[in-house]
Image (cartoon, rainbow, N blue to C red; front, side, top):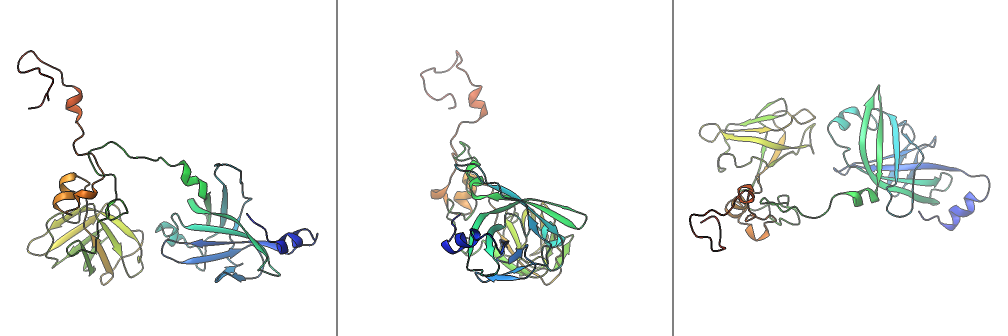
Length: 296
């Protein structure tokens, strides 16, 4: 963290007017500001609310690649972090920034922490959220797996497939929905049976806007009719009329990449890796033993 000369002078004065402020930025772009001061603060275009009941424990920081960590806790309220939003996953991996601020002159501040929300625990009208520093990502497993199937995610930087190409995405209104998990459409032609399996369904409007699920089953139900089932119900209510975006699914097989997406040049797997039967093979007296392939 870097302290400005003005903030250093203020801290050295012996009589300080400092507090802490932190901002939570969700994946959907919503930004919430909190402070442990008794009045609202504002800077960087963010309003920091003192009435949320949210606070934080002391920040643990170290040199090198050790993970900076701390914890935030506070009250669940309709004005700030709600239980419904937490259950819906709207705060999963949200970005967190924390400042030390001179509340008498907010230009005197220092960014002390930047990271993401980790595990969130709820109970008796309150929540506790783990905060993970930027170095936490350095502890994740790296490298590729020697596997026949593709290691990329459809349309990511490795796959490079353009889902905006015709025939791979459908945007339409909800017609019939059961438990925010099963969606039925009376007329949805133009896509083969099971076309969207392993694909992504995203809600574009309504109470569940921004939530997404993975398609478990996609079946044609007669002429033009279709039923799309998710692996897990969405964590908010979905009603007829809400808009959906459904993307084609990929099972990461080489044939799927080549035939369904015409994207085999970007295939990130090893389709010719020997299978388990090759490990158990051995030479036999019959046939040719010339050092060539055992599978002819």
